[in-house]
Image 1 (cartoon, rainbow, N blue to C red):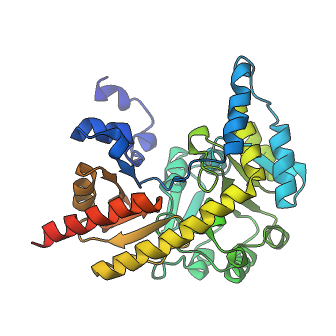
Image 2: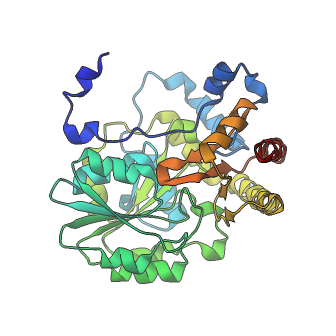
Length: 371
């Protein structure tokens, strides 16, 4: 299709940069003539262990009912989520990934007269969904690699409608201490909806995870986002959820497409939520391998940001060039130049054998570039 057709779209939509996803294994195999079975994908913060066997069983049990639409109310999943989080049924809303709810927040709260605030180095969807509504996004510079919470609160004006804040933060990997988060939520003016994105929450030690009930008690105008794409390994099924006051979720529900979460997604998510042993096993594996990778970066003489998530940001000099060299060798990592971090790469933490392949190839690529 000619580019002329794109110009008939709204100007502010034409101006939105495309989202740069991690390259899929099939695409890299085609481009470089590689065996897909030998490619290691460490680009999209996916669960290298897969998903819970109980989730797979739940998916299989749904296969005979594909002719029926999903449960519009996500009733069974919402009951399970409410019980697991200690909130009421009407305080939980599933979506097609937490990204679905980010989009609905922008649709429901933002326009050309209202703006959003995000910290520097934030998930790109916050700014792109705001831009789709014609809204400006104010980016508050980081304090080192951390969110500057004082500056974020101080940036609020009467026109501020939403603050998007992630902890742990993608693509950096840092997290906000619970006490600091509580102080921030209390400081933000009441008219602002704070969207707290906890996609990587489960990778934190229990003592470092914010207390949901305390957060909801401190701030009424709060939406907490969670996902099944990371620790639960259900990224392909697109299931996330929001926790908030019913009045906030009612707005989001009106904006969602009907039947946003598939039958398989609902069943798999409920089964995954119940399999705490699987989630704990991945948490423990990730913590061990994260320490190993960070020690390896130190031995290579590479700077890295100590991570609280299932990925690590590390500096290599020319991120896109090193990522391309690794990809030619069958190792997919994530360049982050779109975040203004051209000299850095982000790598997802894989299985031990995948990390072995990554480290071996990284060492060879760096040695070749230094020669």
